[in-house]
Image (cartoon, rainbow, N blue to C red; front, side, top):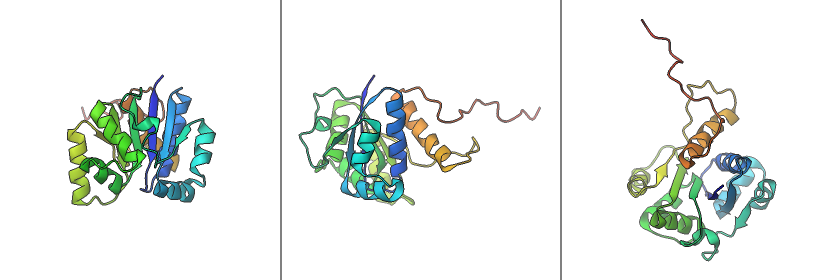
Length: 193
């Protein structure tokens, strides 16, 4: 099993991060959790929990976003991925500019330099041109950008279905088997013949 860093930054969409952590832990993966100050605000508003609650509920190690000496910031530590879910425009901009002034951005930049999997899940709408340019830079450097834009072809019935669609895409990028959503088979549309 692997070790994954999951960061929740200040964009709306903390529910995506919570569900990702739940899915990773259920798959037997280890998670170190980083939550920015603004991420903690959204976690409370959207999920009625604190960072400490989240870590305790799923057996994660909660790291201090101001501790740049934490394991998540290490290039020599054995870490499989860094996922920022949700990723705020500010965090994305700092990463694209090489600014590692907190553990969220430092962990992401270390992932890039070590060629680890880095996944950003932006939840902005609409995107400013600077966000698009910064996501393009990170993508060109090997990062994966998965906008929190769920599909509807599987006929979602609940908000959880929409959240699971995105979390399933993240898990796919991490190579972690999951059955969170219905997969497209190509047989959904009958042939016109």
